[in-house]
Figure 1 (cartoon, rainbow, N blue to C red):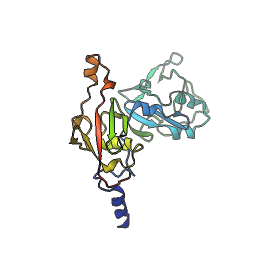
Figure 2 (cartoon, rainbow, N blue to C red):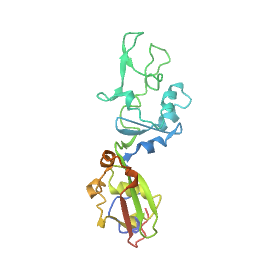
Figure 3 (cartoon, one colour):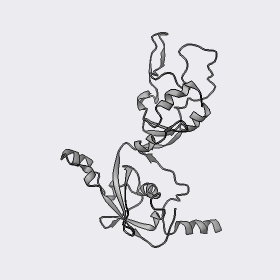
Length: 235
């Protein structure tokens, strides 16, 4: 009961997810690109984002890891057949058999071109099959949004996924304001539904219209205004 009371006190008036256990659903290409080191290695493919850091640590020093390290932080959907979700294949000119196509060179869990005594295939599923390394979805469409704290007049511009809910956007904003959930979020005077996306809240994505009119869309980025509720909620 005490833990429950503590949680209520920590979350204040917020009627939403417990951010202590909150997991993001979407990541932007720019966020994936930040994880571009062997010790912090993400890739995206076929619409999902994968954290291959454990794989890289497990096979540290293995030459077959090199093609994967070279694409750290990038989208590698072109490696895959979207119908089978497997690595693309081609007819090997040496053996005349159907084999994985690896223009960057053979990588982890891809069988060698010819039989070898040192080839161990006891790893179960190859790393690209299944969801063990999946951390979320890749945002196919992103947009910018300004968030203005009316109490402090501070303004921040965030790149967010078009399908993210307002709760997910709030989660992105927490590094700038730990008390973000203590505010009422409004757009053009209307309180936002935090379970909805920007578009569902009437905040239209007008990028196509700006492109059609040959106008710079960065000159008009919608602004969400935050009004303090005086409950000092910290997430």
